[in-house]
Amino acid sequence: METESRFLRFIGGKRIFYILAFFILIGIVIYIYNKISFIFYPLEVILSTIAPPVILAFIAYYLLNPVVDLLEKFRIKRIWGIIVLILAISGVLTGIILLTAPSIEAQIKDLVKNFPDLLKQFGNSMTGWVQNSFLAPYYDEGYNWVMDRFSDIPQLIGTSISDGFQGVQNVASTVTNTIVNLITFPIILFFLLKDGKEFQHYVIKVFPPKFRTDTKQIFHNIDNQVGSYIQGQIIVASVIGILLFIGYLIIGLDYAFTLAIIAAVTNVIPYLGPMIAIIPAAIIAIVDSPFMLIKLAIVWVVVQFLEGNFVSPNIMGKTMKIHPLTIILVLLIAGNLFGVVGMILGIPGYAIVRVIGSYIFLKFQQRYNKYYGEDHGKYEIE
Image 1 (cartoon, rainbow, N blue to C red):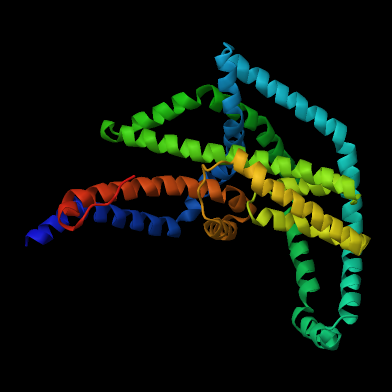
Image 2: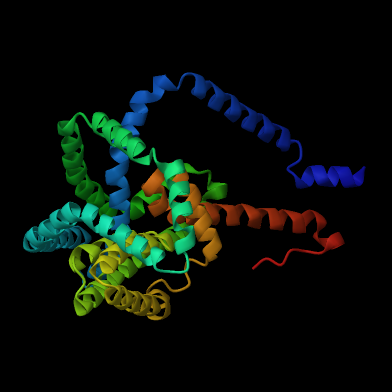
Protein backbone atom coordinates (compact mmCIF):
# COMPACT_ATOMS: atom_id res chain seq x y z
CA MET A 1 0.00 0.00 0.00
CA GLU A 2 2.88 2.31 0.85
CA THR A 3 4.42 1.76 -2.61
CA GLU A 4 1.14 2.62 -4.31
CA SER A 5 0.69 5.81 -2.33
CA ARG A 6 4.28 6.81 -3.06
CA PHE A 7 3.71 6.22 -6.77
CA LEU A 8 0.54 8.30 -6.56
CA ARG A 9 2.51 11.08 -4.90
CA PHE A 10 5.24 10.71 -7.54
CA ILE A 11 2.83 11.25 -10.44
CA GLY A 12 1.28 14.25 -8.74
CA GLY A 13 -1.05 12.92 -6.06
CA LYS A 14 -4.74 13.61 -6.44
CA ARG A 15 -3.88 16.52 -8.71
CA ILE A 16 -3.24 13.98 -11.48
CA PHE A 17 -7.01 13.53 -11.84
CA TYR A 18 -7.43 17.25 -12.41
CA ILE A 19 -4.61 17.16 -14.96
CA LEU A 20 -6.28 14.25 -16.79
CA ALA A 21 -9.60 16.09 -16.74
CA PHE A 22 -7.80 19.15 -18.19
CA PHE A 23 -6.38 17.11 -21.09
CA ILE A 24 -9.78 15.52 -21.72
CA LEU A 25 -11.28 19.02 -21.95
CA ILE A 26 -8.55 20.00 -24.43
CA GLY A 27 -9.45 16.92 -26.51
CA ILE A 28 -13.13 17.91 -26.47
CA VAL A 29 -12.24 21.46 -27.53
CA ILE A 30 -10.14 20.15 -30.44
CA TYR A 31 -12.99 17.82 -31.51
CA ILE A 32 -15.51 20.68 -31.41
CA TYR A 33 -13.10 22.96 -33.29
CA ASN A 34 -12.83 20.28 -35.99
CA LYS A 35 -16.57 20.37 -36.47
CA ILE A 36 -16.96 24.16 -36.53
CA SER A 37 -13.57 25.22 -37.90
CA PHE A 38 -15.23 27.37 -40.58
CA ILE A 39 -16.16 29.84 -37.83
CA PHE A 40 -12.47 30.52 -37.24
CA TYR A 41 -11.67 31.19 -40.91
CA PRO A 42 -11.23 34.96 -40.33
CA LEU A 43 -8.73 34.18 -37.56
CA GLU A 44 -6.80 31.88 -39.92
CA VAL A 45 -6.70 34.67 -42.52
CA ILE A 46 -5.39 37.13 -39.90
CA LEU A 47 -2.69 34.70 -38.74
CA SER A 48 -1.64 33.81 -42.29
CA THR A 49 -1.42 37.53 -43.09
CA ILE A 50 0.74 38.55 -40.14
CA ALA A 51 2.86 35.37 -39.99
CA PRO A 52 5.31 36.17 -42.89
CA PRO A 53 6.38 39.65 -41.71
CA VAL A 54 6.56 38.49 -38.08
CA ILE A 55 8.77 35.49 -38.96
CA LEU A 56 11.01 37.67 -41.13
CA ALA A 57 11.20 40.26 -38.35
CA PHE A 58 12.23 37.64 -35.77
CA ILE A 59 14.95 36.30 -38.09
CA ALA A 60 16.24 39.83 -38.70
CA TYR A 61 15.98 40.54 -34.95
CA TYR A 62 18.36 37.71 -34.11
CA LEU A 63 20.77 38.95 -36.77
CA LEU A 64 20.70 42.64 -35.86
CA ASN A 65 20.15 42.65 -32.09
CA PRO A 66 23.84 41.91 -31.32
CA VAL A 67 24.82 44.89 -33.52
CA VAL A 68 22.37 47.18 -31.72
CA ASP A 69 23.70 45.97 -28.34
CA LEU A 70 27.24 46.72 -29.56
CA LEU A 71 26.24 50.25 -30.60
CA GLU A 72 24.77 50.77 -27.12
CA LYS A 73 28.17 49.96 -25.63
CA PHE A 74 29.56 52.87 -27.65
CA ARG A 75 27.01 55.14 -25.89
CA ILE A 76 24.70 55.40 -28.89
CA LYS A 77 21.09 55.48 -27.74
CA ARG A 78 19.28 52.28 -28.67
CA ILE A 79 16.55 53.98 -30.70
CA TRP A 80 19.09 55.95 -32.77
CA GLY A 81 21.23 52.86 -33.25
CA ILE A 82 18.20 50.95 -34.57
CA ILE A 83 17.20 53.75 -36.95
CA VAL A 84 20.74 54.17 -38.30
CA LEU A 85 21.18 50.40 -38.70
CA ILE A 86 17.88 49.86 -40.53
CA LEU A 87 18.52 52.86 -42.82
CA ALA A 88 22.08 51.70 -43.53
CA ILE A 89 20.99 48.14 -44.36
CA SER A 90 18.12 49.42 -46.51
CA GLY A 91 20.53 51.66 -48.41
CA VAL A 92 23.09 48.89 -48.93
CA LEU A 93 20.42 46.41 -50.10
CA THR A 94 18.91 48.99 -52.44
CA GLY A 95 22.33 49.72 -53.92
CA ILE A 96 23.13 46.02 -54.38
CA ILE A 97 19.74 45.41 -56.02
CA LEU A 98 20.12 48.36 -58.39
CA LEU A 99 23.65 47.31 -59.36
CA THR A 100 23.06 43.57 -59.74
CA ALA A 101 19.39 43.38 -60.77
CA PRO A 102 20.00 43.77 -64.54
CA SER A 103 22.68 41.05 -64.54
CA ILE A 104 20.61 38.69 -62.37
CA GLU A 105 17.49 39.30 -64.44
CA ALA A 106 19.35 38.57 -67.68
CA GLN A 107 20.89 35.37 -66.28
CA ILE A 108 17.58 34.13 -64.85
CA LYS A 109 15.69 34.83 -68.08
CA ASP A 110 18.40 33.11 -70.12
CA LEU A 111 18.48 30.13 -67.74
CA VAL A 112 14.70 29.75 -67.73
CA LYS A 113 14.61 30.01 -71.52
CA ASN A 114 17.42 27.50 -72.10
CA PHE A 115 16.75 25.08 -69.23
CA PRO A 116 14.34 22.83 -71.23
CA ASP A 117 16.98 22.52 -73.98
CA LEU A 118 19.65 21.87 -71.35
CA LEU A 119 17.50 19.09 -69.88
CA LYS A 120 16.99 17.62 -73.36
CA GLN A 121 20.73 17.71 -74.05
CA PHE A 122 21.34 16.20 -70.63
CA GLY A 123 18.92 13.35 -71.44
CA ASN A 124 20.59 12.75 -74.83
CA SER A 125 24.02 12.73 -73.20
CA MET A 126 22.91 10.21 -70.58
CA THR A 127 21.22 8.06 -73.27
CA GLY A 128 24.39 8.07 -75.37
CA TRP A 129 26.51 7.18 -72.37
CA VAL A 130 24.22 4.29 -71.36
CA GLN A 131 24.04 2.90 -74.92
CA ASN A 132 27.84 2.86 -75.14
CA SER A 133 28.37 1.29 -71.71
CA PHE A 134 27.90 -2.16 -70.19
CA LEU A 135 24.26 -1.18 -69.50
CA ALA A 136 23.43 -1.13 -73.23
CA PRO A 137 21.72 -4.60 -73.25
CA TYR A 138 19.32 -3.40 -70.57
CA TYR A 139 18.62 0.03 -72.11
CA ASP A 140 15.57 -0.88 -74.20
CA GLU A 141 14.05 -2.91 -71.40
CA GLY A 142 14.60 -0.10 -68.90
CA TYR A 143 13.29 2.53 -71.32
CA ASN A 144 10.08 0.57 -71.94
CA TRP A 145 9.62 0.01 -68.19
CA VAL A 146 9.95 3.74 -67.50
CA MET A 147 7.61 4.70 -70.37
CA ASP A 148 4.95 2.19 -69.27
CA ARG A 149 4.88 3.52 -65.74
CA PHE A 150 5.56 7.20 -66.20
CA SER A 151 4.13 8.01 -69.63
CA ASP A 152 1.32 9.99 -68.04
CA ILE A 153 3.67 12.28 -66.08
CA PRO A 154 3.66 15.09 -68.72
CA GLN A 155 -0.13 15.09 -68.64
CA LEU A 156 -0.12 15.19 -64.84
CA ILE A 157 2.41 18.04 -64.84
CA GLY A 158 0.33 19.94 -67.40
CA THR A 159 -2.77 19.47 -65.28
CA SER A 160 -0.93 20.61 -62.15
CA ILE A 161 0.41 23.70 -63.90
CA SER A 162 -3.04 24.48 -65.26
CA ASP A 163 -4.55 24.10 -61.79
CA GLY A 164 -1.79 26.29 -60.39
CA PHE A 165 -2.52 29.08 -62.85
CA GLN A 166 -6.22 28.80 -62.11
CA GLY A 167 -5.47 29.06 -58.39
CA VAL A 168 -3.47 32.28 -58.86
CA GLN A 169 -6.27 34.39 -60.27
CA ASN A 170 -5.94 37.57 -58.33
CA VAL A 171 -2.50 39.03 -59.09
CA ALA A 172 -3.42 42.34 -57.46
CA SER A 173 -4.08 40.55 -54.16
CA THR A 174 -0.66 38.85 -54.26
CA VAL A 175 1.12 42.13 -55.03
CA THR A 176 -0.82 43.88 -52.25
CA ASN A 177 0.15 41.18 -49.72
CA THR A 178 3.80 41.46 -50.75
CA ILE A 179 3.77 45.25 -50.37
CA VAL A 180 2.04 44.98 -46.98
CA ASN A 181 4.67 42.46 -45.82
CA LEU A 182 7.51 44.70 -46.99
CA ILE A 183 6.02 47.70 -45.18
CA THR A 184 5.08 45.92 -41.93
CA PHE A 185 8.30 43.87 -41.66
CA PRO A 186 10.62 46.83 -40.78
CA ILE A 187 8.00 48.27 -38.42
CA ILE A 188 7.73 44.97 -36.50
CA LEU A 189 11.53 44.66 -36.56
CA PHE A 190 11.93 48.18 -35.16
CA PHE A 191 9.69 47.46 -32.15
CA LEU A 192 11.29 44.06 -31.57
CA LEU A 193 14.73 45.65 -31.43
CA LYS A 194 13.46 48.53 -29.31
CA ASP A 195 11.19 46.68 -26.86
CA GLY A 196 12.23 43.03 -27.20
CA LYS A 197 13.57 42.72 -23.65
CA GLU A 198 10.58 44.52 -22.14
CA PHE A 199 8.22 42.27 -24.10
CA GLN A 200 9.94 39.17 -22.72
CA HIS A 201 9.77 40.64 -19.21
CA TYR A 202 6.03 41.31 -19.68
CA VAL A 203 5.41 37.72 -20.86
CA ILE A 204 7.26 36.34 -17.84
CA LYS A 205 5.11 38.48 -15.51
CA VAL A 206 2.00 36.76 -16.93
CA PHE A 207 3.14 33.51 -15.26
CA PRO A 208 2.60 32.95 -11.52
CA PRO A 209 5.59 34.08 -9.38
CA LYS A 210 6.38 30.44 -8.51
CA PHE A 211 7.17 29.61 -12.16
CA ARG A 212 8.82 32.86 -13.25
CA THR A 213 12.41 31.79 -12.59
CA ASP A 214 11.99 28.59 -14.62
CA THR A 215 10.13 30.45 -17.38
CA LYS A 216 12.90 33.04 -17.60
CA GLN A 217 15.50 30.26 -17.88
CA ILE A 218 13.49 28.54 -20.65
CA PHE A 219 13.21 31.81 -22.60
CA HIS A 220 16.93 32.42 -22.13
CA ASN A 221 17.83 28.94 -23.45
CA ILE A 222 15.46 29.28 -26.42
CA ASP A 223 16.84 32.73 -27.19
CA ASN A 224 20.43 31.44 -27.12
CA GLN A 225 19.84 28.32 -29.21
CA VAL A 226 17.48 29.76 -31.82
CA GLY A 227 19.36 33.05 -32.08
CA SER A 228 22.77 31.46 -32.54
CA TYR A 229 21.37 28.94 -35.04
CA ILE A 230 19.69 31.59 -37.23
CA GLN A 231 22.74 33.86 -37.14
CA GLY A 232 25.12 31.01 -37.87
CA GLN A 233 23.06 29.37 -40.61
CA ILE A 234 22.56 32.58 -42.58
CA ILE A 235 26.24 33.54 -42.28
CA VAL A 236 27.33 30.01 -43.33
CA ALA A 237 24.92 30.01 -46.29
CA SER A 238 26.21 33.43 -47.41
CA VAL A 239 29.84 32.30 -47.16
CA ILE A 240 29.07 29.15 -49.18
CA GLY A 241 27.36 31.26 -51.85
CA ILE A 242 30.40 33.55 -52.11
CA LEU A 243 32.87 30.61 -52.23
CA LEU A 244 30.83 28.85 -54.92
CA PHE A 245 30.57 32.05 -56.97
CA ILE A 246 34.35 32.42 -56.89
CA GLY A 247 34.77 28.73 -57.77
CA TYR A 248 32.27 28.91 -60.64
CA LEU A 249 34.05 31.98 -62.05
CA ILE A 250 37.42 30.20 -61.87
CA ILE A 251 36.16 27.13 -63.79
CA GLY A 252 34.12 29.27 -66.22
CA LEU A 253 30.69 27.74 -65.46
CA ASP A 254 27.75 29.50 -67.11
CA TYR A 255 25.20 31.32 -64.93
CA ALA A 256 27.74 31.47 -62.07
CA PHE A 257 26.03 34.31 -60.19
CA THR A 258 22.53 32.82 -60.40
CA LEU A 259 23.73 29.33 -59.39
CA ALA A 260 25.66 30.82 -56.44
CA ILE A 261 22.52 32.66 -55.26
CA ILE A 262 20.51 29.42 -55.54
CA ALA A 263 23.17 27.63 -53.48
CA ALA A 264 23.22 30.36 -50.81
CA VAL A 265 19.41 30.32 -50.47
CA THR A 266 19.06 26.52 -50.41
CA ASN A 267 21.94 26.10 -47.95
CA VAL A 268 19.71 27.65 -45.30
CA ILE A 269 18.22 24.12 -45.24
CA PRO A 270 20.92 21.91 -43.65
CA TYR A 271 22.05 18.71 -45.44
CA LEU A 272 19.25 18.78 -48.05
CA GLY A 273 20.07 22.29 -49.28
CA PRO A 274 23.44 21.44 -50.90
CA MET A 275 21.88 18.43 -52.69
CA ILE A 276 19.15 20.67 -54.12
CA ALA A 277 21.66 23.34 -55.18
CA ILE A 278 24.00 20.94 -57.01
CA ILE A 279 21.30 19.68 -59.42
CA PRO A 280 21.03 22.71 -61.80
CA ALA A 281 24.79 23.25 -61.65
CA ALA A 282 25.46 19.60 -62.53
CA ILE A 283 23.01 19.67 -65.47
CA ILE A 284 24.65 22.80 -66.92
CA ALA A 285 28.13 21.31 -66.39
CA ILE A 286 27.26 17.99 -68.08
CA VAL A 287 25.77 19.77 -71.09
CA ASP A 288 28.93 21.89 -71.36
CA SER A 289 31.38 18.95 -71.24
CA PRO A 290 32.40 15.97 -69.06
CA PHE A 291 35.53 17.92 -68.09
CA MET A 292 33.37 20.79 -66.78
CA LEU A 293 31.51 18.28 -64.60
CA ILE A 294 34.85 17.15 -63.14
CA LYS A 295 35.82 20.77 -62.45
CA LEU A 296 32.41 21.39 -60.83
CA ALA A 297 32.91 18.31 -58.63
CA ILE A 298 36.32 19.64 -57.54
CA VAL A 299 34.82 23.05 -56.67
CA TRP A 300 32.03 21.44 -54.63
CA VAL A 301 34.42 19.12 -52.79
CA VAL A 302 36.71 22.06 -51.92
CA VAL A 303 33.79 24.26 -50.78
CA GLN A 304 32.21 21.48 -48.72
CA PHE A 305 35.60 20.72 -47.15
CA LEU A 306 36.10 24.38 -46.22
CA GLU A 307 32.51 24.60 -44.91
CA GLY A 308 32.76 21.42 -42.84
CA ASN A 309 36.22 22.03 -41.38
CA PHE A 310 36.55 25.81 -41.08
CA VAL A 311 33.37 27.78 -41.74
CA SER A 312 30.69 25.89 -39.76
CA PRO A 313 32.87 24.93 -36.75
CA ASN A 314 33.96 28.54 -36.25
CA ILE A 315 30.59 30.19 -36.94
CA MET A 316 28.07 27.65 -35.64
CA GLY A 317 30.24 26.38 -32.80
CA LYS A 318 28.64 23.70 -30.63
CA THR A 319 25.46 25.52 -29.73
CA MET A 320 23.17 23.15 -31.63
CA LYS A 321 24.27 19.64 -30.67
CA ILE A 322 21.85 17.76 -32.92
CA HIS A 323 22.65 14.40 -34.51
CA PRO A 324 22.64 14.53 -38.35
CA LEU A 325 20.01 11.75 -38.50
CA THR A 326 17.76 13.79 -36.19
CA ILE A 327 18.16 16.83 -38.46
CA ILE A 328 17.20 14.81 -41.55
CA LEU A 329 14.14 13.32 -39.83
CA VAL A 330 13.04 16.76 -38.58
CA LEU A 331 13.43 18.23 -42.08
CA LEU A 332 11.44 15.39 -43.68
CA ILE A 333 8.60 15.69 -41.15
CA ALA A 334 8.53 19.51 -41.17
CA GLY A 335 8.70 19.55 -44.98
CA ASN A 336 5.76 17.13 -45.22
CA LEU A 337 3.70 19.17 -42.78
CA PHE A 338 4.55 22.75 -43.82
CA GLY A 339 6.42 22.54 -47.13
CA VAL A 340 9.47 24.73 -47.81
CA VAL A 341 8.72 26.98 -44.82
CA GLY A 342 8.75 23.90 -42.59
CA MET A 343 12.14 22.82 -43.90
CA ILE A 344 13.59 26.28 -43.23
CA LEU A 345 12.06 26.71 -39.76
CA GLY A 346 12.06 23.02 -38.77
CA ILE A 347 15.39 23.07 -36.90
CA PRO A 348 14.66 26.27 -34.91
CA GLY A 349 11.24 24.79 -34.07
CA TYR A 350 12.90 21.56 -32.96
CA ALA A 351 15.33 23.58 -30.82
CA ILE A 352 12.39 25.25 -29.02
CA VAL A 353 10.65 21.90 -28.47
CA ARG A 354 13.90 20.37 -27.22
CA VAL A 355 14.48 23.17 -24.69
CA ILE A 356 10.95 22.73 -23.30
CA GLY A 357 11.29 18.93 -23.37
CA SER A 358 14.62 19.11 -21.53
CA TYR A 359 13.01 21.26 -18.84
CA ILE A 360 10.13 18.76 -18.40
CA PHE A 361 12.57 15.84 -18.23
CA LEU A 362 14.68 17.70 -15.65
CA LYS A 363 11.59 18.12 -13.46
CA PHE A 364 10.82 14.43 -13.90
CA GLN A 365 14.39 13.52 -12.82
CA GLN A 366 14.16 15.74 -9.74
CA ARG A 367 10.79 14.26 -8.81
CA TYR A 368 12.04 10.70 -9.28
CA ASN A 369 15.09 11.39 -7.12
CA LYS A 370 12.81 12.79 -4.41
CA TYR A 371 10.51 9.77 -4.21
CA TYR A 372 12.63 6.82 -5.43
CA GLY A 373 16.24 7.98 -5.44
CA GLU A 374 17.17 6.70 -1.97
CA ASP A 375 15.84 3.18 -2.68
CA HIS A 376 16.73 2.59 -6.32
CA GLY A 377 19.48 5.08 -7.17
CA LYS A 378 19.32 8.67 -8.32
CA TYR A 379 19.46 10.27 -11.74
CA GLU A 380 22.71 12.07 -12.40
CA ILE A 381 21.46 15.56 -13.18
CA GLU A 382 23.91 17.71 -15.12
